[in-house]
Structure formats: structure tokens, C-alpha cells
Amino acid sequence: MIPSLVVAGTASGVGKTLCAAGLIGALRRRGLVVQPFKCGPDYIDPGWHGYAAGRPCRNLDIWMLGERAMRESFARGCEGADVAVIEGVMGLFDGARFDSCAHSTADIAAKLGVPVLLVVDIAAAGRSAAATALGFARFDPALPVAAVALNRAGSEGHARGCAEAIAEVSGLQTLGWLASSPALALPERHLGLQLAAETDRRDAVLSAAADAVAERFDLDAVLRLAGSARPVEGVERRERTPPPADAPVLAIARDAAFSFYYEDDLDLLVAEGVRLAPFSPVAGDPVPEGASGVYLGGGYPELYASQLAANAGLWRGVRALHARGAPILAECGGFMALTEALIDGAGVRHTMAGLVPGVARMTPNLAALGYREATAVCDSPLAPAGATLRGHEFHFSVWDIAEPPSPAWRVEGPYMPEPAAMGHAERGLLASYLHIPLAQRPALARRLAAALSAACGAG
Image 1: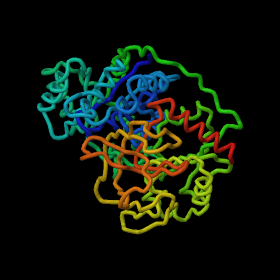
Image 2: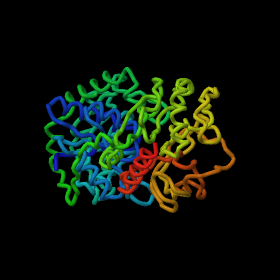
Image 3: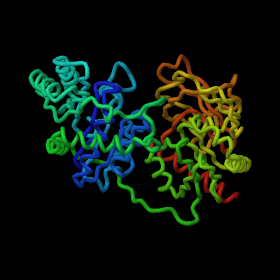
Image 4: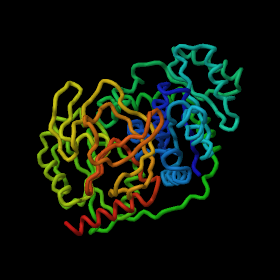
């Protein structure tokens, strides 16, 4: 077990991502190989941490994956690293339910045996910051907070005063603080932060965060705390071997429009003998030659709808694969791109692939957010009819259609008034707003690999 630390928060928006990215950068400057993780179903924050660390960030989620798969993901991700930094999700104790801490950041920290560094936003607080820290320290004795970090301090005196008050009433040590500064602001938009890969501020913000942490955090104390993490036991090790030259090829769209993928899922596909062929629909790339199937992940197709609509070669290739029943997996943004048209935030209609009936239309407000249990309505490249899987959805668009003619899933989840049909499944096509992590069940990647092999032979 390498030294590991969870960077948690009192709530969303307190600066967890900034503190975690700054720690990653500062520790990397010390010559350490840092493995980043993100709790929960997030695709955007991991991009920032991946750039800061120089290696892919991985997700940890008990609700979707189960404890065993979550622990295995953590252990595999830590291979070759010197230290792990795990960013939490929402507030420390926020999970899938209001009446339990199950599946929360605290739950993940406890099950991994990793200490928690709590980020407290003191922008509009003085001694009250101590009350907040005390509440989190005592809320659940089985899930303790080990230390705190302060964010958005008005001055060094402000930070020192809050740290002294926190130590007085809770006994928690403050390991560092960050100032309230425009240079430390991560750019935002709908769905959360702006993608690290597409902002020209990325390098400057990450450098400023690493500078600030190096200057104002006790990194030796941080590493001592991380060193108290318990060993992760009972984890199966898997050999990673590249697929053979004649392995089936899965074309995977990876650019500013389609970027939401879990690294563990891609690893699992490769382990099952699938070759991944990245391509960029936004740049005008067609489906790669020899592909046995296509994976269109989530992202921001609404921001690049004109480029996607103009990529006639892409849609010809996708339609040709569909015509022969090849596997086509489309999630959220990918689902939107396979509809008849995408109506962007300005009301402009862009013609899309037309493989899914109806239109995807952007709305000014959040349309759906949350974990989902999904039962397959029919056989698909991922699962047989009747199989129940776990996933999540998060989108600002709606699917304008009276009733799905060939639904992929029957879904239910928190804040849903009743179960509902979702998505479109037809032959090898599986398209919906759902993000379904493959790591929750080994059979998912195996089934998709088998479908790609069959399509490769038929092609």
C-alpha cells in the first residue's frame, strides 16, 4: 500500500479540486509519481488531476461498482506510483441517500483505510470555521477526519486565526491554506468545470495551484498523514498484455465533444482482447478503417454540433456499421449525436446521424442528475434482456420524442417519480443518456468484446 490521502470537502464548491490538483502538482515537483483518483461518477475533475499528475486519473464509486471492484480499481491504479491523492465528491458524508453515509467519500475512505484531509472554505467565516470542523470531526466517530486544509483565506492572518480556532475546539491540525485569488479559479460552465484539455488557462492554473500548495502547505506533514493509510488486502492482480494484431478494433471517439470515459473500462476492454482506435469526429475524422464497432462517449456535442453535422464521412461509417449489426455504444453526448438532429442552446438545429429517432434539444436547466438502476429491455452488446446494471445520468438536454419505440432500459432512481423507459436499442446499437461503468461486472466487457469479434468475422 502506497501513502494515500483523501481530499474531501464540507460541500461541493469549497475547493476540493483545486486543493487536490495543487497537492498533486506540488508532490510531483518533489519527484514523486502521484496517482490521482476521483470519488463518484465524475468525468471532468479527473481530467484536471490527470494533467497535474501526468498519468490518468481513475474513479472510485462503491454504489455503481461495489466494494470489491472499487478496491481492485484502487489497487490497480496505484501500481507504479509513490503516493495517491483521492478527491472526494460533494460533501464528505454525502452518498446515495439522505439517511446514510453509505457510498459517500467517507465510506470510500473508511473501506480503503485512507486518512481524510477536510477542505474548509473560510471566505466568509472566522471562528465559525471551527464549529464546522468540529461538526465534521464528531459527526461519525467511525469515519474520522484526520486534518484540515483551508481555502479562500483573505490573508495569512485570517488563515492562522481560523487554524488556531479549529485546533482549539476540535484538536484537528491545519496542514495548509490557499488564498482567495482569481489566479486559483478553475474555469466553469454547465456540467461543472471546463474541460482541462480545452482551456488555455489549464497550465497557468495548475502551476499556480502547485506553487500555492508548495508555499503554504506542510508537505512533509501531508506525506506523514498519507503514510498512515492501511494496506489494501484481498485484491486480485491481473496481468496486462496488449491485444494481438488481429484483435477486433473498437473505434473510440476522443476529442472535445466526446471525452467522458472511465479509464478502468478501457483497460478492461483491452484485457479482453480489444484494440482501441481513438479518432476525432470534431476534427473531421471518419470511423477508422477496419473498425468492428464504435464507442461514442459523453461530452459536449452541443458545443461542436456544426463540426459534427459537417462530418459526412463519420455518419456514413457509423450507418454502415449499423447496417450490418455491428456494436455501437453511445452514452449521453454520444446518444445525442445519433439522434435525427441536435438543437443547441441558441435554438439552431444541426442534422446528426439519424440512427435514433427524435431530436436532442438543449435546455437552460439541468434535465437529469443521479444514480440509476437500469434493467435491459432487450439483448444488447453489453447485457442480455432482464439484466440489471447500475449507472448514472447528468445532462442539460432532453430527448424530444413521445415514447421510445425501442427502449434500451427500464430505469429507476432517486427523485424519479416512477420507473421510466430510456434510450434506444436496435440490433447492435445501444444508445441512451445512461453512463454504465463496465467495471461493475466483468461479463460486460467480455460480452462487448465477443460482439466485436463476431462483427469482425462477419465484416
